[in-house]
Amino acid sequence: MSAILLDGKKVSQQVLDACAQRVSRIKAETGVTPCLATVLVGDDVASATYVKMKGKRCESVGMKSLRIELPASTTTAELLKTITDLSNDPGVHGILLQHPVPHHIDETAAFEAIAPQKDVDGVTAASFGAIAFGIDAGGYGACTPAGIMTLLNAYNVPIAGKHAVVIGRSAILGKPMAMMLLNANATVTICHSKTVNLPEMVRQADIVVAAVGKPRFVQGDWIKPGAIVVDAGYNAGNVGDVDFEACEARSSMITPVPGGVGPMTIATLIDQTSIAAQRQLAR
Image (cartoon, rainbow, N blue to C red; front, side, top):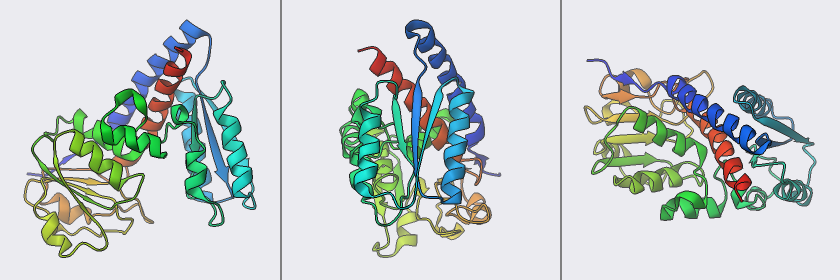
């Protein structure tokens, strides 16, 4: 039997439809339109495309999109001031700093300048801590892992008691992904570039999340028959971090690239912005 494709396009649209209803209620009850501010530093073409796409998704659910574009020469201090001003602006309910930023900027400091209640991209230490401790109202999940959890839940994927292997340990994907799976009662192993005998580790997994940034890195013979494969990578040529055809042949469920995790990431960002607006306006 062919593996079931975990359709991120379909599920993300369901998320956005529910988000549009929430936005409509917020407008009716408060007279305020939720607003996401996106900050782009430099002229990276891919980053500019992502920001434009996120703006369109905002508008599709009835939210405002405030786009801040700064030159590549922007200093860390200048970026911090911009983000602090947005954090203090009551008309802005969510802030996204498009990353990566130019190398001379302290990205961590820029992330930490985002007010926790407006960190809808889930990039601050406060948000990570809230997710790790399972405090629902205390922060927002990093959008890619949070989107993956929504996708798995939409397909009724059993997580409790399963062995999940996360390949990658970045602060905004691998680590929060592991925490979210752990909170869902999976047994979690985090693998990375220093992991010894990685293929054998992956072969033990009921759920595999690949987030390494290397095209077709995960091979088909690494996958335990019947495992669920989530490809969180996106590389040139529309290929992910797993060898799709080979992994599909052994898995029970798998995300396509494109059309799997990517749409869920953007939908989660928009949804969390609407939730942030609802919380801020209720105060």
